[in-house]
Image 1: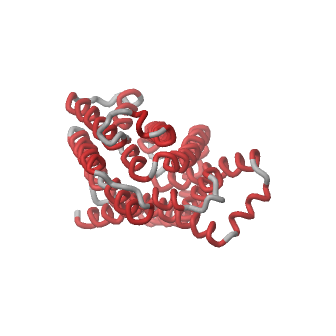
Image 2 (image 1 turned 120 degrees about the vertical axis):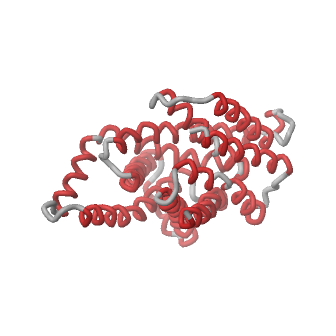
Image 3 (image 1 turned 90 degrees about the vertical axis):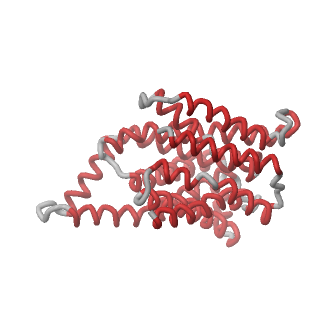
Length: 310
């Protein structure tokens, strides 16, 4: 339990810091090339972790099963789900791009709060795709969650026209990203249920596929000479840092899950908007207002109640 809480706290710091790195990157790094490199760095981080996991899996089995047989079994499961994996690669590649575009317009604080609607979309797709039940209390607190979000974003005015077109566009992009993100996880779940891939393998696969797709898209729309931007030290620092922070957040999440129930781990990770607000105020100069504070409280409370109902 204590180890789970420890990884939850570490994860909060990494996840909360993601929007800060995203919005402080050099202007020469556009969202597409930044998303491409972030996915590639994440894949590089998770590749050795995946190999260690496969090796441990072999050590737990009897001596009659060779490591080569286990590796072939893993590859066969990937091949069996190739079409779905390609779809997942596209979804999470687009999501990574929308992440940077959305935060650029919405700002770190509003963007971080918007991402907490994942719990609502989890309920929605769980009901539509996985046929999971939704309680009345979950519906009520989903409404409260969005009330808190709107309260924070509009600064209590509840007038979207007052927050500006760019900020509103950013929030809408992040809502779409969050919806797509949860849809990606919903269609991934059956693969886990059939034991045809582990979460670690899926993170590696989705990131390497996303990187290939995004880099290919970049080559179509932009000249190859733009890749020289990646060699500039300050640019390299930011995309490596972004990949590391994003990857470390995921590693912390999976370590927390190894010690805690999913709902408990999610609740522990729910205060990330507070971490983002602290970093955004200090580093980016964003204002964290009373409306942000009340909205954040309502969002976190709603997440707690919704997950406790599961």
